[in-house]
Image 1 (tube, rainbow, N blue to C red):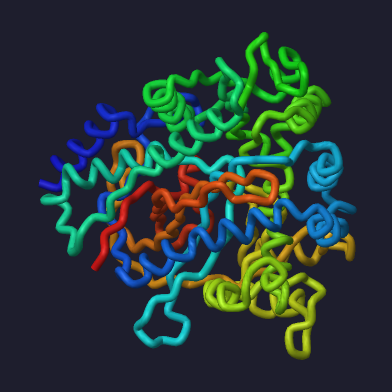
Image 2 (tube, one colour):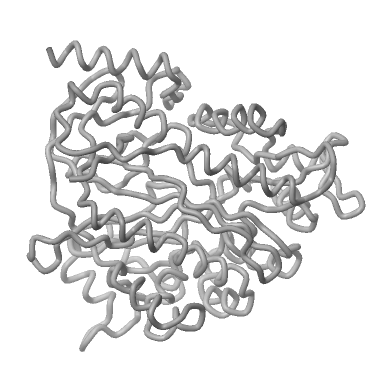
Length: 446
């Protein structure tokens, strides 16, 4: 019976576009979990309610150049990528931008009270993937729910609709006829179909066409004409980054020239360079300090957000009578070392973290933050990867997608639009789906 269910699920994936390229660029189904993640309804409600508050906080941070410069200048001394992004802050047109964010959490019972609390892993401001595939996995679970023995009600999910609606509105706001969306992509993209899902629905619902280009191609084919970004004689109303979050996307000067061209133009950025920097791990650490959030939000809202924060430190920071560096060396399995990087596969754990710390000089310490390791309770799930199923103990990371359009000092809209669940074997550290570490899932309330 279980073998039939697995084959049926895989067939559904291929039939309905739950697919990706593997590392050899052979078409396969996306890794999926057949056991929806069970979340207490009150926890779900609290995360959804705080989504626009987080959005408002991060938009204000991303538009505060002085704040970003002050807190990232030490990181920029050893991180050339951060330095170059900071340099762009003085050149960019930030009068308006669209934010498509994802706020990631793990649930934990820190006090052994039996009550789960969401702890923030990170706030992602650029290239947030899987709005298309997440909705498709929800549909898969809807189809198979009678076979999955899900104790609870599946939580409806279609973040793609929210993404496309936000894009359609801001292209209309740009108020220039016959404009396009520019999707900045990598030259070899394993997660192509998640991107294409956005492109196709945007055309179908709003009649807006998409141009896909790498940063190098933008530099080669683009120019600024009367303030507008123009590529191949087509005016770009909105530039949506599904690349440009890693130094690997800037291996040539032409790539940087393409980014500079985008930033200097009046195209609406998604995200702006300021918002990209606001997602840096160093900024996450700074916001956890007493009194910082209160610079951007009322005290009552700041208190609510702080309940979700895990402990997070600079390596030289004093924690009681010792430094965070010493804490990590003494208890490496209680912490995770994070650099200023997006995209998964960059964090260091356990003995690997200890080995890295031993080699750091004082300047290199500034490029990392130390975060307490969030330890969620495990559950048994069925994971399916490359047509092979395995029932294992798992943990799940949940993310809330949101959109926010910022015009000068005015937030035109600010919405929660759905979720992402990534379920992985409990002995895995990283959570990147396309790197093979985690499986796409949906959630049900209990």
